Image (cartoon, helix red, strand yellow):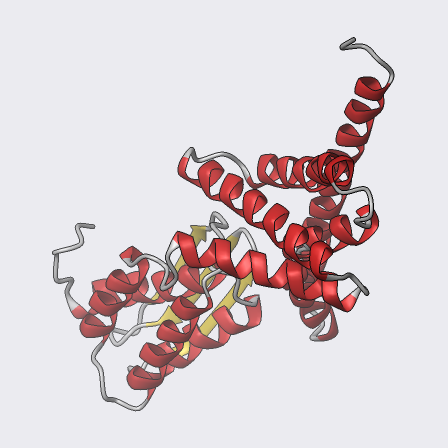
Length: 265
Protein backbone atom coordinates (compact mmCIF):
# COMPACT_ATOMS: atom_id res chain seq x y z
CA UNK A 1 0.00 0.00 0.00
CA UNK A 2 1.39 3.38 -0.96
CA UNK A 3 2.46 5.84 1.70
CA UNK A 4 0.16 8.53 0.30
CA UNK A 5 -2.87 6.26 0.07
CA UNK A 6 -5.70 6.95 2.52
CA UNK A 7 -7.16 3.52 3.33
CA UNK A 8 -10.80 2.89 4.02
CA UNK A 9 -11.55 2.52 7.75
CA UNK A 10 -11.78 -1.30 7.74
CA UNK A 11 -8.82 -1.65 5.40
CA UNK A 12 -6.61 0.70 7.38
CA UNK A 13 -7.12 -1.00 10.73
CA UNK A 14 -4.90 -4.02 10.15
CA UNK A 15 -2.19 -1.95 8.47
CA UNK A 16 -2.08 0.46 11.42
CA UNK A 17 -1.96 -2.32 14.02
CA UNK A 18 0.75 -4.18 12.12
CA UNK A 19 2.86 -1.06 11.70
CA UNK A 20 2.58 -0.10 15.37
CA UNK A 21 3.73 -3.54 16.52
CA UNK A 22 6.47 -3.77 13.90
CA UNK A 23 8.01 -0.41 14.83
CA UNK A 24 8.15 -1.39 18.50
CA UNK A 25 9.83 -4.77 17.88
CA UNK A 26 12.22 -3.50 15.20
CA UNK A 27 13.52 -0.75 17.47
CA UNK A 28 14.26 -2.83 20.55
CA UNK A 29 10.90 -2.83 22.33
CA UNK A 30 9.61 -5.73 24.37
CA UNK A 31 7.20 -8.17 22.76
CA UNK A 32 4.63 -7.64 25.51
CA UNK A 33 4.68 -3.92 24.76
CA UNK A 34 3.90 -4.59 21.09
CA UNK A 35 1.05 -6.93 22.06
CA UNK A 36 -0.42 -4.47 24.55
CA UNK A 37 -0.18 -1.56 22.10
CA UNK A 38 -1.96 -3.50 19.37
CA UNK A 39 -4.75 -4.62 21.69
CA UNK A 40 -5.28 -1.16 23.17
CA UNK A 41 -5.42 0.49 19.76
CA UNK A 42 -7.88 -2.12 18.47
CA UNK A 43 -10.14 -1.81 21.48
CA UNK A 44 -9.89 1.98 21.31
CA UNK A 45 -11.57 2.07 17.91
CA UNK A 46 -14.33 -0.31 18.94
CA UNK A 47 -13.02 -3.67 17.75
CA UNK A 48 -13.85 -6.81 19.70
CA UNK A 49 -11.96 -10.05 20.34
CA UNK A 50 -8.66 -8.28 19.71
CA UNK A 51 -5.77 -10.71 20.13
CA UNK A 52 -2.07 -10.26 19.47
CA UNK A 53 0.88 -12.60 19.77
CA UNK A 54 4.36 -11.22 19.18
CA UNK A 55 7.76 -12.85 18.93
CA UNK A 56 11.02 -11.10 17.99
CA UNK A 57 10.62 -12.23 14.38
CA UNK A 58 6.88 -11.93 13.78
CA UNK A 59 3.44 -10.60 14.67
CA UNK A 60 0.13 -12.46 14.77
CA UNK A 61 -2.98 -10.28 14.98
CA UNK A 62 -6.69 -11.08 14.95
CA UNK A 63 -9.87 -9.13 15.72
CA UNK A 64 -13.55 -9.03 14.92
CA UNK A 65 -14.29 -5.99 12.79
CA UNK A 66 -17.24 -3.64 12.78
CA UNK A 67 -18.89 -5.83 10.14
CA UNK A 68 -18.74 -8.86 12.44
CA UNK A 69 -16.11 -10.68 10.38
CA UNK A 70 -13.00 -12.11 12.02
CA UNK A 71 -9.80 -10.70 10.51
CA UNK A 72 -6.32 -12.13 11.07
CA UNK A 73 -2.81 -11.55 9.74
CA UNK A 74 0.79 -12.68 10.09
CA UNK A 75 3.59 -10.12 9.75
CA UNK A 76 7.30 -10.94 9.42
CA UNK A 77 9.54 -8.63 11.44
CA UNK A 78 13.21 -7.98 10.76
CA UNK A 79 15.13 -6.51 13.69
CA UNK A 80 16.87 -3.25 12.71
CA UNK A 81 18.38 -1.73 15.84
CA UNK A 82 17.54 0.28 18.91
CA UNK A 83 15.58 3.53 18.81
CA UNK A 84 13.64 4.14 22.01
CA UNK A 85 12.34 7.46 20.68
CA UNK A 86 10.29 5.69 18.02
CA UNK A 87 8.86 3.35 20.66
CA UNK A 88 7.83 6.34 22.77
CA UNK A 89 6.21 7.98 19.73
CA UNK A 90 4.21 4.84 18.96
CA UNK A 91 3.07 4.69 22.57
CA UNK A 92 1.91 8.32 22.28
CA UNK A 93 -0.12 7.45 19.15
CA UNK A 94 -1.63 4.45 20.94
CA UNK A 95 -2.70 6.59 23.89
CA UNK A 96 -4.37 9.12 21.59
CA UNK A 97 -6.26 6.40 19.71
CA UNK A 98 -7.37 4.80 22.97
CA UNK A 99 -8.58 8.16 24.28
CA UNK A 100 -10.50 8.86 21.08
CA UNK A 101 -8.29 11.82 20.19
CA UNK A 102 -7.02 10.30 16.93
CA UNK A 103 -8.75 8.28 14.23
CA UNK A 104 -7.25 5.09 12.86
CA UNK A 105 -6.48 6.82 9.54
CA UNK A 106 -4.62 9.61 11.34
CA UNK A 107 -2.80 7.02 13.43
CA UNK A 108 -1.81 5.09 10.31
CA UNK A 109 -0.37 8.22 8.70
CA UNK A 110 1.48 9.22 11.86
CA UNK A 111 2.92 5.72 12.25
CA UNK A 112 4.19 5.86 8.66
CA UNK A 113 5.92 9.15 9.45
CA UNK A 114 7.49 7.62 12.57
CA UNK A 115 8.65 4.56 10.64
CA UNK A 116 10.28 6.67 7.91
CA UNK A 117 11.95 9.12 10.30
CA UNK A 118 15.62 8.91 11.17
CA UNK A 119 16.97 8.51 14.63
CA UNK A 120 17.02 11.63 16.81
CA UNK A 121 20.78 11.39 17.33
CA UNK A 122 23.28 12.16 14.57
CA UNK A 123 26.20 9.82 13.91
CA UNK A 124 28.66 12.24 15.48
CA UNK A 125 26.77 12.22 18.75
CA UNK A 126 26.72 8.41 18.73
CA UNK A 127 30.51 8.41 18.46
CA UNK A 128 30.77 10.94 21.31
CA UNK A 129 28.39 8.84 23.42
CA UNK A 130 30.57 5.75 22.88
CA UNK A 131 33.64 7.77 23.90
CA UNK A 132 32.01 8.98 27.11
CA UNK A 133 30.55 5.56 27.94
CA UNK A 134 33.87 3.75 27.55
CA UNK A 135 35.78 6.46 29.39
CA UNK A 136 33.30 6.32 32.26
CA UNK A 137 33.62 2.55 32.60
CA UNK A 138 37.43 2.82 32.45
CA UNK A 139 37.22 5.25 35.39
CA UNK A 140 34.87 2.84 37.19
CA UNK A 141 37.37 0.00 36.69
CA UNK A 142 40.09 2.06 38.37
CA UNK A 143 41.77 3.57 35.33
CA UNK A 144 43.71 6.82 35.28
CA UNK A 145 43.51 9.68 32.83
CA UNK A 146 45.33 7.82 30.06
CA UNK A 147 43.13 4.72 30.40
CA UNK A 148 40.01 6.91 30.33
CA UNK A 149 41.19 8.81 27.25
CA UNK A 150 42.32 5.83 25.19
CA UNK A 151 39.41 3.58 26.18
CA UNK A 152 37.11 6.33 24.90
CA UNK A 153 39.10 6.70 21.68
CA UNK A 154 39.02 2.96 21.02
CA UNK A 155 35.27 2.84 21.61
CA UNK A 156 34.80 5.85 19.30
CA UNK A 157 36.70 4.09 16.51
CA UNK A 158 34.66 0.92 17.03
CA UNK A 159 31.43 2.95 16.92
CA UNK A 160 32.56 4.63 13.69
CA UNK A 161 33.27 1.23 12.12
CA UNK A 162 29.84 0.03 13.26
CA UNK A 163 28.14 3.01 11.60
CA UNK A 164 30.02 2.31 8.37
CA UNK A 165 28.90 -1.32 8.52
CA UNK A 166 25.29 -0.18 8.91
CA UNK A 167 25.54 2.06 5.86
CA UNK A 168 26.94 -0.92 3.93
CA UNK A 169 23.96 -3.01 5.17
CA UNK A 170 26.17 -5.61 6.84
CA UNK A 171 24.69 -8.08 9.30
CA UNK A 172 24.93 -7.33 13.01
CA UNK A 173 27.16 -10.35 13.54
CA UNK A 174 29.84 -8.76 11.32
CA UNK A 175 29.70 -5.61 13.44
CA UNK A 176 30.03 -7.68 16.64
CA UNK A 177 33.09 -9.57 15.36
CA UNK A 178 34.76 -6.40 14.06
CA UNK A 179 33.98 -4.62 17.31
CA UNK A 180 35.57 -7.34 19.41
CA UNK A 181 38.57 -7.49 17.06
CA UNK A 182 39.29 -3.75 17.18
CA UNK A 183 38.56 -3.47 20.91
CA UNK A 184 41.31 -5.99 21.59
CA UNK A 185 43.73 -5.02 18.79
CA UNK A 186 44.01 -1.25 19.29
CA UNK A 187 45.01 -1.46 22.98
CA UNK A 188 47.96 -3.67 21.97
CA UNK A 189 49.38 -0.80 19.91
CA UNK A 190 48.59 1.77 22.60
CA UNK A 191 50.50 -0.05 25.35
CA UNK A 192 53.56 -0.24 23.07
CA UNK A 193 53.46 3.56 22.78
CA UNK A 194 52.65 4.09 26.48
CA UNK A 195 53.89 1.08 28.47
CA UNK A 196 52.43 2.36 31.72
CA UNK A 197 48.84 2.15 30.47
CA UNK A 198 46.77 -0.83 31.69
CA UNK A 199 45.71 -2.97 28.75
CA UNK A 200 43.06 -4.78 30.78
CA UNK A 201 41.31 -1.55 31.75
CA UNK A 202 41.49 -0.27 28.17
CA UNK A 203 39.82 -3.39 26.79
CA UNK A 204 37.26 -3.65 29.61
CA UNK A 205 36.20 -0.03 29.21
CA UNK A 206 36.13 -0.01 25.41
CA UNK A 207 34.08 -3.20 25.13
CA UNK A 208 31.24 -2.01 27.36
CA UNK A 209 29.35 -0.09 24.59
CA UNK A 210 29.21 -3.36 22.64
CA UNK A 211 27.64 -5.39 25.44
CA UNK A 212 24.07 -6.43 24.44
CA UNK A 213 22.45 -5.05 27.56
CA UNK A 214 19.03 -4.37 26.02
CA UNK A 215 18.71 -7.91 24.68
CA UNK A 216 19.64 -9.37 28.08
CA UNK A 217 17.14 -7.09 29.84
CA UNK A 218 14.36 -8.06 27.42
CA UNK A 219 15.24 -11.73 27.85
CA UNK A 220 14.83 -11.50 31.63
CA UNK A 221 11.62 -9.47 31.40
CA UNK A 222 9.99 -11.78 28.85
CA UNK A 223 10.97 -14.90 30.79
CA UNK A 224 9.61 -13.51 34.06
CA UNK A 225 6.34 -12.67 32.32
CA UNK A 226 6.06 -16.28 31.16
CA UNK A 227 6.80 -15.56 27.48
CA UNK A 228 9.39 -18.29 27.05
CA UNK A 229 9.67 -18.03 23.25
CA UNK A 230 10.64 -14.36 23.29
CA UNK A 231 12.77 -14.82 26.40
CA UNK A 232 14.81 -17.61 24.85
CA UNK A 233 15.11 -15.69 21.59
CA UNK A 234 16.44 -12.53 23.24
CA UNK A 235 18.68 -14.56 25.53
CA UNK A 236 20.14 -16.47 22.59
CA UNK A 237 20.76 -13.22 20.73
CA UNK A 238 22.56 -11.72 23.72
CA UNK A 239 24.66 -14.87 24.23
CA UNK A 240 25.56 -15.09 20.54
CA UNK A 241 26.54 -11.42 20.42
CA UNK A 242 28.79 -11.86 23.46
CA UNK A 243 30.40 -14.94 21.87
CA UNK A 244 31.03 -13.06 18.60
CA UNK A 245 32.65 -10.17 20.47
CA UNK A 246 34.85 -12.63 22.36
CA UNK A 247 35.67 -14.43 19.10
CA UNK A 248 36.81 -11.18 17.51
CA UNK A 249 39.01 -10.50 20.54
CA UNK A 250 40.56 -13.97 20.29
CA UNK A 251 41.33 -13.41 16.60
CA UNK A 252 43.03 -10.15 17.53
CA UNK A 253 45.14 -11.83 20.22
CA UNK A 254 46.15 -14.56 17.78
CA UNK A 255 47.18 -11.96 15.22
CA UNK A 256 49.25 -10.06 17.78
CA UNK A 257 51.03 -13.23 18.86
CA UNK A 258 51.91 -13.96 15.24
CA UNK A 259 53.27 -10.47 14.75
CA UNK A 260 55.29 -10.61 17.94
CA UNK A 261 56.64 -13.99 16.83
CA UNK A 262 58.55 -12.24 14.08
CA UNK A 263 56.56 -13.41 11.06
CA UNK A 264 56.84 -9.93 9.57
CA UNK A 265 60.49 -9.59 10.28
